[in-house]
Length: 82
Image (tube, rainbow, N blue to C red):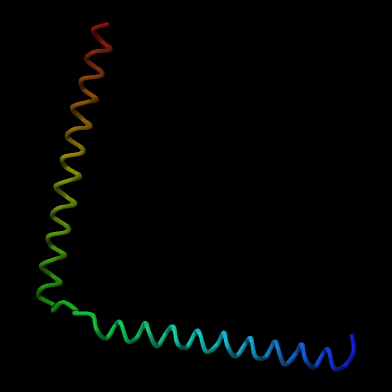
């Protein structure tokens, strides 16, 4: 590889690196711009929504546990009968 080829390759690599950095900066500028448009909930809303989620998760886990217990009991009953 000649000296001119190496110089051309290095300058091409530098240009690619500069383009990548420019794309990354543009990406984060876009992300920041979109985050400024987001409507963030107030503290009161956040606490309320969190409470709703926690209660829903507890209710669903209780329902699934109840169904699991019922089906297990039914299977055990059927196995003891046969």
